[in-house]
Amino acid sequence: MPYKCGSYHIIEKTAISAGVYSYVILCPDVAEAAKPGQFVHIKVEGFTLRRPISICDIDRRNGSIRIVFEIRGHGTAKLTDANVGDSIDMIAPLGNGFTLQESIALDRRIITVGGGIGTAPLFGVAKVFRESATAILGFRSYDKIILANDFKQNDVHVITCTDDGSVGLKGTVTAPLEAELAKGDVDMVYACGPQPMLAAIVQICEKSGVPCEVSLEQRMGCGVGACAVCACELKSGMLMVCRDGPVFKGEEVVL
Amino acid sequence: MIMKKKWDLTATVAGVTFPNPVIAASGVYGFGEYYTDLYPLSLLGGISCKGLTLHKRQGNTPPRVAETPAGMLNSVGLQNPGVDTFIEKHLPRLKREGANIIIANIAGDTPEDYAEIASKLDGTDVDMLEVNISCPNVKKGGAAWGVSCEGAALVTKTVRTATKKPIMIKLTPNVTDITEIAKAVESEGADAVSLINTLLGMRIDIRTKRPILHRNVGGLSGPAVFPVAVRMVWQVVNAVKIDVVGMGGINSAEDAVEMMLAGAKAVQIGTAIISDPLAPLKIIGGLEHYMDINGIKKIDEFVGGVKPW
Image (cartoon, rainbow over all chains, first blue to last red; front, side, top):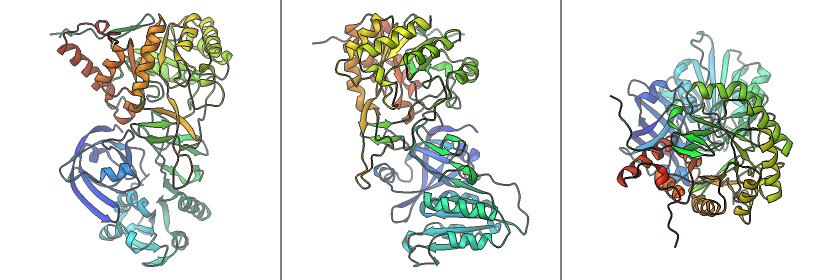
């Protein structure tokens, strides 16, 4: 799928929790081509490397996409200076995106598992499946929760976990994932989050015999596959997160 | 009606004529396959392909990149499919897609490796070889050959006997006197030199105390190295008779003009493409503008035009 490179306007900006921002960007050509799990590569004034940010939601009718990102360093902090009406320079949509089956049987469902900011790219997936999706969302504590209401408003069944038990289940996403998979009606698991979490999810899915896809992160250069800096080691060899991923099949990854 | 261009942007390096002096640098452009969504390859003067080794290479363990003030560090470690795959698969596609001058960048562990790669490429459509004796990110070979006059001369001599194609030696800035290396490769039959490869650098995460690059150190590129590159190009131009291609942090048409005033016959664009994939086109357009407002008809009118104090 061809990607674009250009300047697009921010039409909505929201701080959704401490250090986490949501931007809606008007980009009809990008929205038309984009798939859940793909990302945009944003130029931040004063920085050599662009910042890859996953697409959280795609609105083809309005010709916009939504990105949700966390301040990680100077670059992402600088990016939050951009306000509604400002334009941002981005290359998009990039990467492969999640594999979404065309339809799902009435008695079957999919599960999305997101940890922290890793919740963002899964919203677009859950939104496609609505009531046939269960979203397991893991956060450190209640004040870190993001997007839970967005999932709920789209009829997705939401299970929230916090490390400290301040909201929802106490502990990590793994226990509820095991419990849900035990019900035997899950076609596919989609996951994004910290590496140890992904490693555990891949293992659990393998044990249950349910296919899973994980979205990986790596320090990135060009974003289109040319510069070979965002390598990740897979069972089949060294692949590029930007071009071959960021979504990989659970059985392929080495975590 | 065919509009005749007012400016002649052609550049000649080692007897090879480029339609314009802007070349995509090795390492940032793959084999030209990733940017055709944005513009045809025929707009570039040339493409220096990703460094090729005799056999496929996996490259280094990630992370391989780090942000730096006005630049970046990389430690890719010559990940590439090997010269045979390039000849079978990538080179025909580059020709088909209308790439102008195709430069094969080659790297070996030993002079014999360089020679074998060069002879494999000798009968192909490649226009020129760029001999990488300056990669800072591999244990064997690479910059190990480029940091001594003897090593640089030996590789040049070996490649020279293996191919009739023009050869351009890519030099490392991580040496005491780059002009000595340039003279050494000139005397062994190099047709041109290109410089600078990256400067060895390091960044450390103060929170984890870990270097950001898994290989601890890597090559610094981007605007931060530009003045070093201009200086070295100017020094080398004054030391050798063969053509010099300048690179290192060129980010705009003004930078390209500056590099050419220092004496570079053509320029390579690397890190700027990572920041902005359209950078080469902006630089070509900017060069035309510079020539227009200064009444320059041919780029040779300003190449080497610096007036030193």
